[in-house]
Image 1: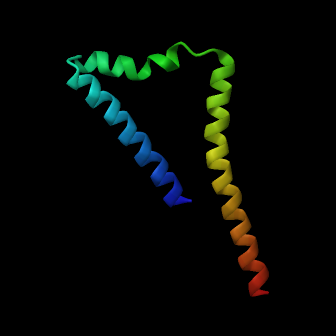
Image 2 (image 1 turned 90 degrees about the vertical axis):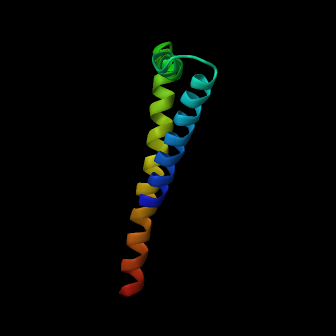
Length: 79
């Protein structure tokens, strides 16, 4: 679970930094680069927020379910 969460955070950091870096290369100040990064979240509809939260929970929930199944399998095989 930690590996998947680590990869998730690493990809989030890399894509965010790539987006900001490209905006800086285009000549935008850092404030505008951050504005371009966060603007899509400010104009989302409530249904889109629900979908983003659902996808985030699906990613985390899948790892929790996998961890629970692994724990159950280890207990069954040790009995």
